[in-house]
Length: 159
Image 1 (cartoon, one colour):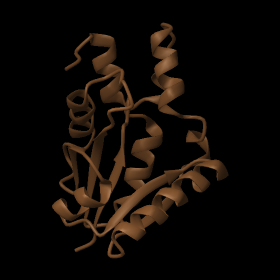
Image 2: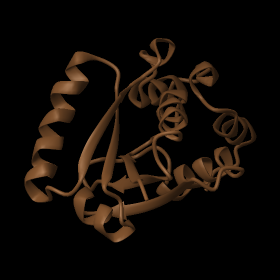
Image 3: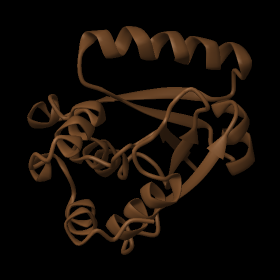
Image 4: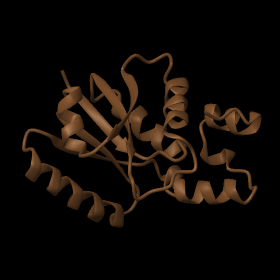
């Protein structure tokens, strides 16, 4: 079985994230969306909220499962039997950063391969950092967000 882990903070979940997942679905039998807990980051939304968003977005697709994890990504891959790490690339600078991480992961475990998908051009400007800034400052971030995220933000239904 081809199982991949799509790791990230996803704070919040954006259309850029769902674009990568949607285009990975034909390539893999199972896509785990791994919401990583990073002690160096202070997220705007709880990990449980981010997982709830993914669960809502992909409720009708059994190939997608979200989970929360801490520690090394390659160790979590072993736990869920993933042989692939999925990463989205928007710019050349993303590739340089992601390749460094992929090289480190390959050194830690040669059985896990990193797969890069480039984002659709219309989502190139969609970055969680920018979306958080829009939300913090009372702007309308809906052009960058899936419907499940828009709905919970408008209704104030957050975990």
